[in-house]
Length: 163
Ligand code: ADP
Image 1: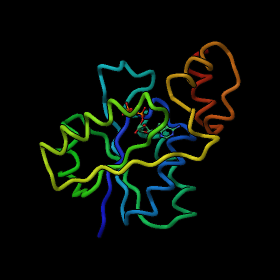
Image 2 (image 1 turned 90 degrees about the horizontal axis):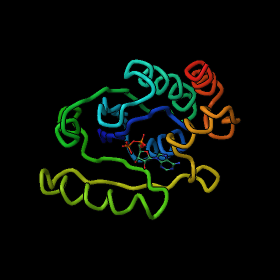
Image 3 (image 1 turned 180 degrees about the vertical axis):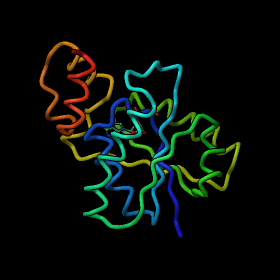
Protein backbone atom coordinates (compact mmCIF):
# COMPACT_ATOMS: atom_id res chain seq x y z
CA UNK A 1 0.00 0.00 0.00
CA UNK A 2 1.51 3.28 -1.15
CA UNK A 3 0.93 6.18 1.23
CA UNK A 4 1.66 9.80 0.37
CA UNK A 5 1.65 12.90 2.58
CA UNK A 6 0.54 16.24 1.10
CA UNK A 7 1.40 18.87 3.71
CA UNK A 8 0.37 22.51 3.74
CA UNK A 9 -1.31 25.30 5.63
CA UNK A 10 -4.50 25.28 3.52
CA UNK A 11 -5.54 28.73 4.77
CA UNK A 12 -7.91 28.27 3.00
CA UNK A 13 -7.91 25.30 0.61
CA UNK A 14 -8.01 26.55 -3.02
CA UNK A 15 -8.68 25.03 -6.44
CA UNK A 16 -4.87 24.87 -6.79
CA UNK A 17 -4.72 22.51 -3.78
CA UNK A 18 -7.68 20.52 -5.10
CA UNK A 19 -5.89 20.09 -8.43
CA UNK A 20 -2.76 18.74 -6.71
CA UNK A 21 -4.80 16.42 -4.45
CA UNK A 22 -6.53 14.96 -7.52
CA UNK A 23 -3.23 14.41 -9.31
CA UNK A 24 -1.66 12.96 -6.16
CA UNK A 25 -4.43 10.38 -5.90
CA UNK A 26 -3.12 8.82 -9.11
CA UNK A 27 0.23 8.12 -7.41
CA UNK A 28 -0.84 6.62 -4.09
CA UNK A 29 -3.41 4.31 -2.54
CA UNK A 30 -3.86 6.57 0.47
CA UNK A 31 -3.25 10.30 0.51
CA UNK A 32 -2.80 11.88 3.92
CA UNK A 33 -3.38 15.62 3.75
CA UNK A 34 -1.31 17.12 6.54
CA UNK A 35 -2.82 20.37 7.74
CA UNK A 36 -0.06 22.26 9.53
CA UNK A 37 -0.94 24.25 12.64
CA UNK A 38 1.63 26.80 11.44
CA UNK A 39 1.47 29.35 14.25
CA UNK A 40 4.23 31.37 12.54
CA UNK A 41 1.98 32.12 9.59
CA UNK A 42 -0.86 33.32 11.91
CA UNK A 43 -3.55 31.62 9.80
CA UNK A 44 -6.87 33.39 9.16
CA UNK A 45 -8.82 30.16 9.70
CA UNK A 46 -8.45 28.03 12.82
CA UNK A 47 -6.99 24.56 12.45
CA UNK A 48 -10.47 23.06 12.91
CA UNK A 49 -11.91 25.29 10.18
CA UNK A 50 -9.08 24.46 7.77
CA UNK A 51 -9.41 20.73 8.42
CA UNK A 52 -13.19 20.86 7.91
CA UNK A 53 -12.82 22.78 4.63
CA UNK A 54 -10.20 20.35 3.29
CA UNK A 55 -12.42 17.43 4.31
CA UNK A 56 -15.39 18.93 2.48
CA UNK A 57 -13.31 19.40 -0.69
CA UNK A 58 -12.13 15.79 -0.60
CA UNK A 59 -15.57 14.15 -0.78
CA UNK A 60 -16.17 14.94 -4.49
CA UNK A 61 -12.54 14.10 -5.34
CA UNK A 62 -12.89 10.66 -3.76
CA UNK A 63 -16.12 10.09 -5.65
CA UNK A 64 -14.17 10.66 -8.88
CA UNK A 65 -10.87 8.97 -8.11
CA UNK A 66 -11.64 6.28 -5.54
CA UNK A 67 -8.83 5.47 -3.11
CA UNK A 68 -8.49 6.86 0.37
CA UNK A 69 -7.89 10.34 1.77
CA UNK A 70 -7.20 11.13 5.41
CA UNK A 71 -7.03 14.70 6.68
CA UNK A 72 -4.47 14.85 9.46
CA UNK A 73 -3.61 17.96 11.51
CA UNK A 74 0.04 18.08 12.55
CA UNK A 75 2.40 20.28 14.50
CA UNK A 76 5.58 18.22 14.57
CA UNK A 77 8.42 18.00 12.09
CA UNK A 78 7.22 17.15 8.58
CA UNK A 79 9.47 14.12 8.30
CA UNK A 80 8.19 12.79 11.65
CA UNK A 81 4.63 13.34 10.51
CA UNK A 82 5.44 11.37 7.32
CA UNK A 83 6.86 8.52 9.42
CA UNK A 84 3.86 8.62 11.81
CA UNK A 85 1.39 8.15 8.97
CA UNK A 86 3.56 5.58 7.15
CA UNK A 87 4.13 7.79 4.10
CA UNK A 88 6.94 6.93 1.69
CA UNK A 89 6.47 10.05 -0.36
CA UNK A 90 5.80 13.71 0.33
CA UNK A 91 3.75 15.50 -2.28
CA UNK A 92 4.25 19.21 -2.96
CA UNK A 93 2.87 21.53 -5.58
CA UNK A 94 5.13 23.83 -7.57
CA UNK A 95 3.87 27.14 -8.82
CA UNK A 96 6.35 29.81 -9.84
CA UNK A 97 10.12 29.81 -9.81
CA UNK A 98 9.75 31.57 -6.46
CA UNK A 99 8.60 28.28 -4.86
CA UNK A 100 11.67 26.47 -6.10
CA UNK A 101 14.36 27.88 -3.81
CA UNK A 102 12.44 27.06 -0.62
CA UNK A 103 11.34 23.63 -1.83
CA UNK A 104 14.88 22.84 -2.97
CA UNK A 105 16.18 23.50 0.55
CA UNK A 106 13.35 21.56 2.15
CA UNK A 107 14.10 18.47 0.06
CA UNK A 108 17.78 18.68 0.95
CA UNK A 109 17.08 18.96 4.67
CA UNK A 110 14.35 16.34 4.72
CA UNK A 111 16.54 13.93 2.77
CA UNK A 112 19.30 14.42 5.35
CA UNK A 113 16.78 13.61 8.08
CA UNK A 114 15.33 10.55 6.33
CA UNK A 115 16.68 9.41 2.95
CA UNK A 116 13.94 6.81 2.55
CA UNK A 117 11.19 9.40 2.06
CA UNK A 118 11.03 10.85 -1.46
CA UNK A 119 9.52 14.26 -2.30
CA UNK A 120 7.45 14.46 -5.47
CA UNK A 121 6.49 17.77 -7.12
CA UNK A 122 3.46 18.31 -9.27
CA UNK A 123 2.13 21.28 -11.21
CA UNK A 124 -1.49 22.23 -11.33
CA UNK A 125 -3.41 22.80 -14.54
CA UNK A 126 -2.33 26.07 -16.21
CA UNK A 127 -5.51 27.87 -15.11
CA UNK A 128 -4.83 26.98 -11.48
CA UNK A 129 -1.08 27.48 -11.27
CA UNK A 130 -1.23 31.07 -10.14
CA UNK A 131 -3.70 30.51 -7.30
CA UNK A 132 -2.27 31.20 -3.85
CA UNK A 133 -4.18 31.21 -0.54
CA UNK A 134 -2.47 34.45 0.42
CA UNK A 135 -3.75 36.33 -2.65
CA UNK A 136 -7.20 34.77 -2.39
CA UNK A 137 -7.46 36.16 1.16
CA UNK A 138 -6.32 39.58 -0.04
CA UNK A 139 -8.94 39.63 -2.81
CA UNK A 140 -11.69 38.48 -0.41
CA UNK A 141 -10.65 41.05 2.19
CA UNK A 142 -11.01 43.82 -0.38
CA UNK A 143 -14.41 42.56 -1.48
CA UNK A 144 -13.32 40.99 -4.81
CA UNK A 145 -14.73 37.90 -6.50
CA UNK A 146 -12.84 34.72 -5.54
CA UNK A 147 -15.14 32.29 -7.34
CA UNK A 148 -12.45 31.35 -9.90
CA UNK A 149 -10.02 30.36 -7.16
CA UNK A 150 -12.01 28.50 -4.48
CA UNK A 151 -15.22 26.46 -4.28
CA UNK A 152 -18.49 28.18 -3.19
CA UNK A 153 -18.31 26.91 0.45
CA UNK A 154 -14.78 28.30 0.84
CA UNK A 155 -15.83 31.60 -0.80
CA UNK A 156 -18.72 31.79 1.70
CA UNK A 157 -16.36 31.08 4.62
CA UNK A 158 -14.07 33.89 3.43
CA UNK A 159 -17.03 36.27 3.13
CA UNK A 160 -18.06 35.42 6.71
CA UNK A 161 -14.52 36.06 8.00
CA UNK A 162 -14.30 39.43 6.37
CA UNK A 163 -17.84 40.36 7.30
P1 ADP B 1 2.67 25.90 2.77
O1 ADP B 1 2.57 26.86 3.93
O2 ADP B 1 3.25 24.58 3.15
O3 ADP B 1 3.30 26.46 1.53
P2 ADP B 1 0.17 26.01 1.31
O4 ADP B 1 -1.18 25.66 1.81
O5 ADP B 1 0.40 27.40 0.85
O6 ADP B 1 1.12 25.58 2.46
O7 ADP B 1 0.55 25.05 0.11
C1 ADP B 1 0.58 23.65 0.28
C2 ADP B 1 1.16 23.01 -0.95
O8 ADP B 1 0.29 23.22 -2.05
C3 ADP B 1 2.52 23.58 -1.37
O9 ADP B 1 3.30 22.53 -1.89
C4 ADP B 1 2.16 24.56 -2.45
O10 ADP B 1 3.23 24.75 -3.35
C5 ADP B 1 1.01 23.82 -3.11
N1 ADP B 1 0.12 24.73 -3.85
C6 ADP B 1 -0.66 25.71 -3.37
N2 ADP B 1 -1.31 26.35 -4.37
C7 ADP B 1 -0.94 25.73 -5.52
C8 ADP B 1 -1.25 25.93 -6.92
N3 ADP B 1 -2.05 26.89 -7.32
N4 ADP B 1 -0.66 25.09 -7.80
C9 ADP B 1 0.20 24.13 -7.39
N5 ADP B 1 0.53 23.91 -6.11
C10 ADP B 1 -0.01 24.69 -5.19
